[in-house]
Image 1 (cartoon, rainbow, N blue to C red):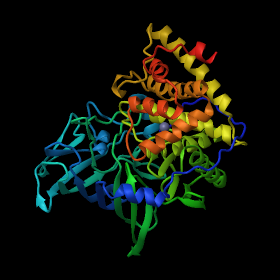
Image 2: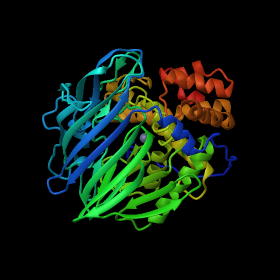
Image 3: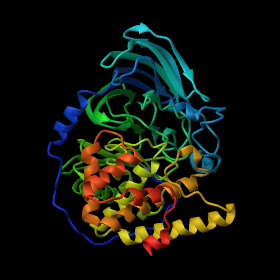
Length: 501
Ligand SMILES: [Zn+2]
């Protein structure tokens, strides 16, 4: 995600690197990976009048652990928009003005039935604010066992400018369906939604989504359209995506769309109220080309940028990014496009638990954005300005915070729940994250830094990375001892003036 509180940034010089993509083609990579993944097939209908969605989701999954499962868990993220929540409401009080156009509105997900291999199965909705679905299973007792879980559910959409909900211009379906929780290290990750950060963690899977909706809408979505038909005013569109961590959909009756085919993917921009759509499409094309050159080819066939009613600057989903219509500054609008596209490498391709290590994907997305300005002339910002602004605003933040609260916890490597405010999260995750990766780059040189980032993509594509693994990967690809250096940033002992002064 990109917060819209930000720093001013602007651009410089060009050092184009030779095209060095992965050994295999995109299709070959995805083809190989997708064979062993869980799959979701969702059939859904949008009722525009009542602002509801009814859907059936079939999840085919395999036991990949040496563990005997008697149940599986799914996140029910739409319940973060439910009335009366005590722990996990998606909107904090300071966000309300940007989120709601006037009155507060609520939404939810109701799980109606669950079947396993065609038979009714026992399930329960759990957690403080019903943020989890627990489904019993008798079929995942040992490694290699497979099962098929069918969940029928209905969604009530809130009127809110958020990842999930409808506003004046668009209907946003981000984090809208029951998605499998991640089981790792012998336990389930069952954390609930928070208004801070991107509180999501999921593994790559294959998706097929069939949506029926009023023919006057345009639907933009994760993945590639494989079929579309219209009957009696109802359009039904099928999208497929292989090896992606999530699947988001946006509808609007106001959309225009422009597109450009690049070396690696078809880039589309869905927009309304935009006098310079071609500039924003070009920004997206420049971003995908630059990051493909720097980190390794974008692995999917399409990338969609869509303007939405959204309270933050933007939001990343696999092959689809939101850009907020609340941004009035052109430089910021372009910056958000670049930042969200950088997440296609950091979050989408190389995943991380965003509830624990948000500094990895946000810090890398910010650092990649700074690199983008270094490699592309003619934008509003330069890399030096981006870094300079980040440093001065971070130091100012530290001074003010210390003054007001007496002390300051500058540890980056901590659970999202331990941040006291969105501001603290933004400074320690985005801003200090950017400064840390820039500090590593200064220490080892840009050539080695790019080797490390490319190395992360090669070694951890379609997987998830921990800070420990990231440090080891950086050491492997730079041939430098970086552990104590990076650790001092993460644990908050680094003194910024000395490093950067
Ligand atoms: Zn972000």
